[in-house]
Amino acid sequence: AAKAAGKSAYRTCTPALREEAVSRAELIADLRRAVDEGQLHLEFQPIVDLATGTVRSAEALVRWRHPRLGVLQPAAFLPLAEETGLILPVDRWVIQEACRAAAAWRKHAPEVTVAVNIAAAHLRRPDLIDTVTTATAVAGLSPHALTLELTESALIEGSEAVLDRLRQLRELGVGIAIDDFGTGYSALSYLHRIPATELKVDRSFVARLDAEDPRAYATVDMVNRLAAAFDLAVVAEGVETGAQHAAVTAIGCLQGQGWRYGRPTALPELLAALTPVDVTH
Ligand code: C2E
Ligand code: MG
Ligand code: MG
Ligand code: MG
Image 1 (cartoon, rainbow, N blue to C red):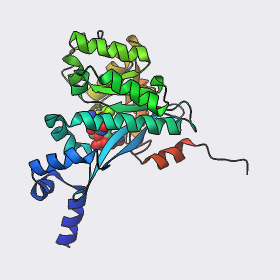
Image 2 (cartoon, rainbow, N blue to C red):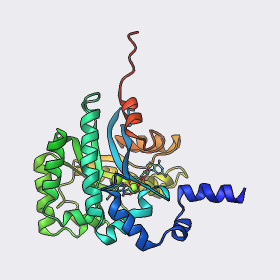
Image 3 (cartoon, protein in one colour):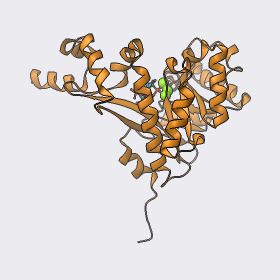
Image 4 (tube, rainbow, N blue to C red):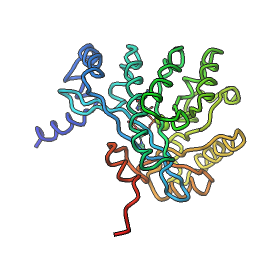
């Protein structure tokens, strides 16, 4: 039984077991090949309109099917990818693949957009604009259907060049979401300079709504008001329970994401959820 448990833990890859199984250097070497060898894939998690349940968008989340370790979640390899610069080819692949997937689902659900996470390193690179314009053009996707998710820490270093790049993306029609909002160094002074279109309320705040924590409630309420004042959309992240759903709805958040509405899934399952059921026969 211990062996079976060990094996299943191994397959889901807890960090401790992973470190035993493969060294850091090996993992870096493996990651270097992962993009070219087609070992990455995407899952998509719906972002829904809280009033109607309609899927508005889907966030692309990267996974790595490691040849020996099984499927690795982002937390298991993105920190390493960021340290080594391998995050650049990884995210470039994610942007291309997500644009392609979105172009396909928009044939069934023309309004549904796609969100892609990008690491801070991209903002420092002049070729980000080129990556985005090429990926959307090749996929035949309108840049208006793409949102890039950035964290506060990525934005806060905001040099003039970075701000300029963000403005160029906005001019193309690309949306800019501030991910995990409230968890960074939240210098509110940066917010008015960033040409953002959306705030994503971090799931740590949403999680505490369950316990009827008045401070958590006040925090989500504050973010929602702030967003309204700045004319930004709001997405409540990590909504898992009915009580959390009720709370974020009562606060006035218009969009939500979380297990309550749908787990990250492969593209075919997302497509099935987006395609209206034929009731004519
Ligand atoms: P994120 O952008 O905040 O993405 C949301 C994470 O929360 C995802 O984890 C998702 O599976 C998880 N999640 C969604 N709903 C719930 C819920 O109701 N409860 C709980 N407990 N979790 C929920 P995941 O897929 O492990 O991704 C983790 C992080 O890795 C992402 O956080 C994002 O920052 C980063 N990431 C994922 N894909 C990429 C990528 O392609 N490029 C970059 N640069 N970062 C990525
Ligand atoms: Mg995100
Ligand atoms: Mg997030
Ligand atoms: Mg988050």
